[in-house]
Length: 358
Image 1: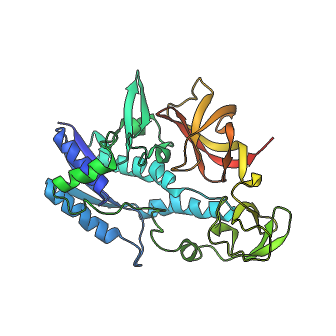
Image 2 (image 1 turned 60 degrees about the vertical axis):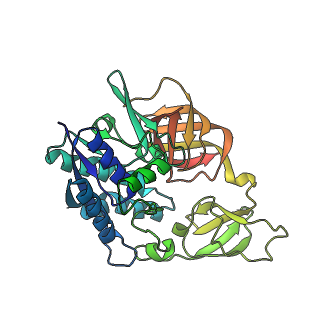
Image 3 (image 1 turned 30 degrees about the vertical axis):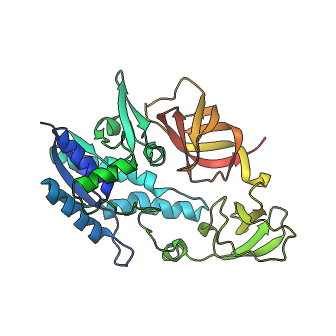
């Protein structure tokens, strides 16, 4: 009987995933990963561990606990801070998957004697010949392939994703039928180490405030900002631009950052052309198959939950890629990832460096 070690977060997804593995006849053990240490009211690690323990007791499986906080700080959080210093908007959850969950946790599980690991991600794994393929989960609203584009062949082949063919509603129903106390537990949202706290209050503990001017694309002054790291391209809320700067009643949006002069560039109206671009240049490219696809016409997600956009590969150079979108994309953001697909297949992705129009 193959031994599978599942990452048990205390949430409903990993709980149901564990039950499915048992139903399929695997020998199952679980690991609770502590990736962040914080004594504040916003840290849910203790309650999450108790929820994980209740699930494991009900399933009669062993629960291990491992502390990856040092590795998380070194490999994920420090990168997160450095990216913000550069005026970019990183996605640490993607890096957490490649560096912690599918590297450190995978190695830890293999040391426990596991043949594979499992997680509660809503994705599917299949094979074509000797290659393993990562596909979107069938629940389009919960598909998490965007966050796993940085994985390689070994990481995927060593992993099982029991929830790929489930909808969230079916997962909650199954959890309730199994008598899990967490069957109706809310999904975690946002960046894991920030949780429900205010982003600005959190980040200023690590990066100093650097106030500056807010200016329009024409160079007109419209207000002050607290620091470029607190804003992202396409952001509308929280700008605090009052009346009197324009005859238009439309909301203001962040359209760029001038790091040299510490200026936040804004424009008015979501339809403003300054917010839309057809071309991106990206780096840190990863192909899940280990090499690029033969076809150049693909689709892409430019943010999690965004609709797929038709695009064409226009340049490839080692870990760099250039893309042209069929239609201009709203709010392309340096530091965010573009993830490439061939229909349901997640091919890989890269991190946005620059965006432009012809």
